[in-house]
Amino acid sequence: MTLLVTGGAGFIGSNFVLDWLADPAAEPIVNLDALTYAGNRQNLAALARDARHVFVHGDITDRALLDRLLAEHRPRAVLHFAAESHVDRSIHGPGAFIRTNVEGTSTLLEAARAHWSGLDGNARAAFRFHHVSTDEVYGSLSPDAPAFTETHPYEPNSPYSASKAASDHLVRAWHHTYGLPVLTTNCSNNYGPYHFPEKLIPLMIVNALAGKPLPLYGDGLQVRDWLYVGDHCSAIRTVLARGRPGEVYNVGGWNEKTNREIVHTVCALLDELRPDPAGPHARLITHVKDRPGHDRRYAIDARKIERELGWRPAETFDTGIRKTVQWYLDHADWVAGVQSGSYRDWVATNYAAR
Ligand code: NAD
Ligand code: TYD
Image 1 (tube, rainbow, N blue to C red):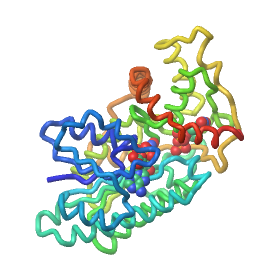
Image 2 (image 1 turned 45 degrees about the horizontal axis):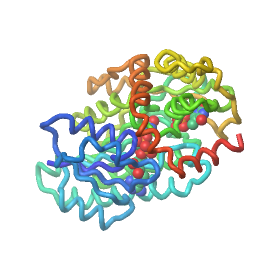
Image 3 (image 1 turned 60 degrees about the horizontal axis):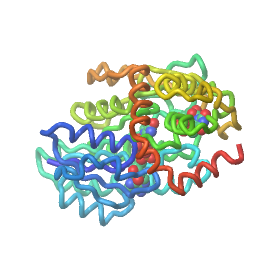
């Protein structure tokens, strides 16, 4: 028995692969990743001598490669993490998001359908296609609106969320039309180890450590529902094991915070763990021009996954953010390694005009 994971060199995918293989009895993983700027084999260094981890450098739009991997490894499930994932990049260049998130997902669905159709009896009944998606497909909430349930209308506002919404619709249709046994999880903002420092929390940590400005978009009062990445991985394992095919499960941390609160918390932790002789890290907070079309608030109602499958997050925000800041302090080499020329080009593109 094997799992095919896509995007397992990225932030959440690599956390999932590491968590999964931490169990000595766990099934092997074939990890297909195109190693875009967001993919990093260093995240998987601990598995270098683990024969249960087979890394394949390749693209989910490559149907021939997908067919070959499915025929060779005969996975019992596909876990689909691969995506272009950063809203600001989608504003600067939506094409890659359409290609990977829409075309890539449809290519993967077709390859999985062909594989699943050829399975017999029990293997066919047990097969799962797990699609990892986001709460951003539901759009933006007003301050006192109830949190997103699984039946909330789709109202994506950015090229990223529109491309993820399209992929969710394809997954749904492949179940409805062909009977492919799919599972979809729509998760809120994750944070934790191996988070690429283009996203809010790791960007603030690495900039604060370097004494650089901490750029808060607009008034900084946008709200996100933050979930520690290890909890997202445990939710995916739970849904894979016990979720009902064709169902959608929202995954969240019951933890709504404004960006301003997040950045102040990161600064306070750094003041405690790595004090800066020049003064409190919060002195570096700088309000910059807002993101176009910026969604004001996301919040997840995670009662369905708790009621049906018994999943709840294990970390509070206090425990998760402390672990995360400590991880970045302990992994200066990883941070230096991802701040390549292309990372610096992106920072210049996104922040120079703000
Ligand atoms: P990420 O950007 O860190 O990693 C994406 C990975 O996919 C990278 O390793 C990249 O190399 C790979 N990839 C990109 N295009 C590919 C292609 N065409 N073929 C094969 N591999 C390709 O993203 P992440 O934050 O780990 O997100 C993983 C998934 O979870 C995504 O589907 C995202 O939409 C979803 N999600 C993310 C969050 C979050 O807070 N980060 C929240 C909810 C859902
Ligand atoms: P981000 O980590 O990009 O995730 P998403 O847009 O998918 O929610 O951003 C989280 C929030 O932080 C979002 O409201 C935008 C804001 N933000 C900043 O204020 N400054 C920044 O430099 C970045 C990258 C994000």
